Image 1 (cartoon, rainbow, N blue to C red):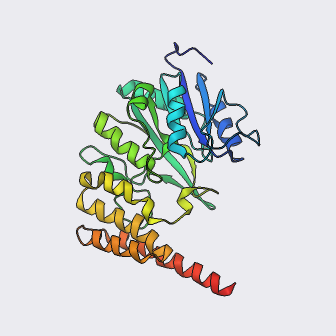
Image 2: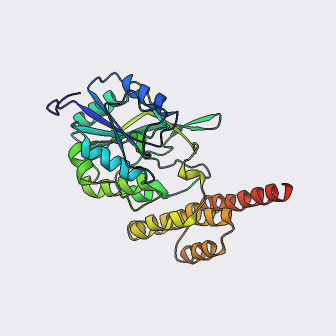
Image 3: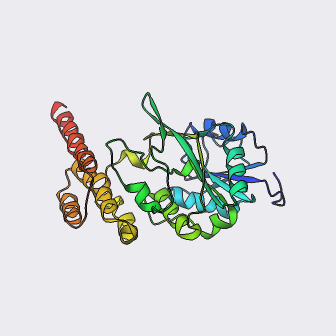
Length: 298
C-alpha cells in the first residue's frame, strides 16, 4: 500500500455483509493487470466473523445495519488512491477492468467512467446496456426509461463505476436512500461533469442478480418513492411514467398493497408510459398470485 503519492493508485471500496462471495470478489481485484491497488472492505456488520475480508488492505465496520451507501462513503473517506472504484461484495471483475478504465479516463480527460456489464440471472448471462448512453439525453431518462420488456436498455451499475477521488469526495452516496442509490449517484454525477463521461464498451464487470440478502429481492414500493420525489422534476414525462410503472406499481401489485396501487395510478395519470413498462408492472400481480397460491397450498 502506498502513501497516496502514486497517481496511479486505485482504491477499491467494497461494502459488504460478510457474505462468502466476498472472497471471490476480493480475488478478482487482486488479479487485476493494473497492480497499484488498495482494497478497502467496509463491513455492515459488527465484525468479520467468517474471515471473508481476508486479502483487503483496510477493513472498516459500520457497526451493523447502516447500509451500503454509508459503507461506500466511509471507504471514500479512508481512500488514498487518485481513483476510486466501487464493487459490490457479490460481484466480480474481469482482470483488465481497472487498466482499461484508467486508459479510457486518461485518453478522454474525464473524472467519471463506467463499463459494460455481464448480467447473471439464474443460468442466463446477458451483456448490458442494450442501448449506449448518448449525448443529448439525460442520464436519469437513460436509466429509467423502459421501451422494451427486458431491463437494461440503459444501465450503469455501482460495480462498474470509477471516479477520481476528488469527484468521489465531492459527490457522495445518498445515505437516506434505501433503493436506487446507484441511479441517484450517476444522475448527480452527470449534473457535476455534464457529458464528460468515459464509457468502456466492453463487459468487464460480472453482476449477480438478486443475491441472498439483496434489497432487490424485496418488493416494497415505498423504497422507490424517495428517489422519485428527488428526481421527478428532472425526468421526462415518459421516464416518470416508466419509473412509476416498473418500480412503484409493480412492487405495490406484488405486495397486494392498495395504497401503493392508488399512489402509482395517480402518478401515471400525469405521465406517459411505454406499453412495455405497463406490461412489466403487471408481473407484480403475477408475483402476488404465486405467493397467494403458495400460502393456500401450505
